[in-house]
Image (cartoon, rainbow, N blue to C red; front, side):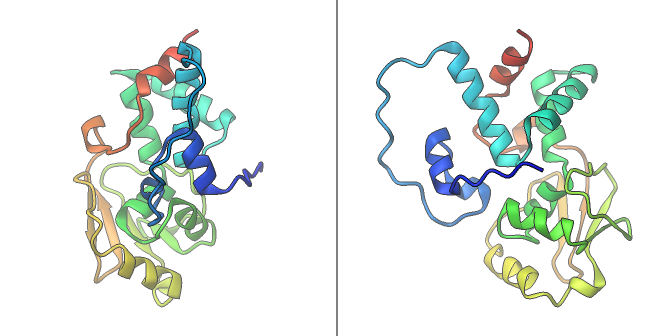
Length: 197
């Protein structure tokens, strides 16, 4: 699998993302890079796509597949795409507070520390459905990584489409997220326009 080794904060500056969105506590510096010329329409569309890919940790081939799936579903394509990205297991683990960052959530899933409906799942791109129960595996409940994530995420609010039980280290998916429940500064309509060319 391809790995992007660009430093996270540098990439955040390039795309205009606040690192807090990814789970990092370091605030972005106030100084923005000076733009020499007006950004083209294509440039804005491409930046929005890169922003979404970077936040969710998805590569181009998989992102395009998500777009085709969102296009085939009923409803607004951009909102469908955001709901698909948000319902990935690694994102749900991050949103529930079982990991400090999205990358840490991905690694936690890959190492087999997460179960869905009682079965161990080690695929970060696994898509959860309404009614699924996402929990920390019994053997992983004492891991320092998960305990420290719970301590650092105490003040982070869980989205309305999820419900978490910190005592049992589990959370349930109440419904798929709607666009207004996703708190990311992404203009998904520009991504749809880019792919529909």
